[in-house]
Image (cartoon, one colour):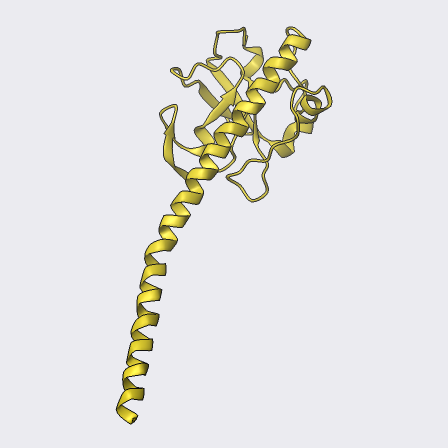
Length: 172
């Protein structure tokens, strides 16, 4: 009888070992899948903002929204979408750099990227898009970019031409 109990214990320890080993393999796979889903969500949400700014342009030719809230208030955007790549969900905002024209079909050569929190300190803001505030490396390559803070979503964007990015508060 004692020998039988010993085998049961060995089988139980072996089963726990196999379960632990399978979880060790499965967790990175699940993490990768979750990151891929977040990347798809980032692309969807970023494109929603671009479309909202396009609709705003149709309603107010030649003007850009001064806040993301205005896009919701004017029914250009159904609701405020959070940045899925950050815990706080705050986007960095894209502005044309020094009044550069963003006519349809023309991508600006330079853009200004500023954190959402400094929007109130910018004189006459003209929002043309959003970009994730996460500098984490991506699994997917989007418009030849490998970090989320380079996945730009702005009105008039040419995916073949990456504009020069000027960051708010940094010297050119």
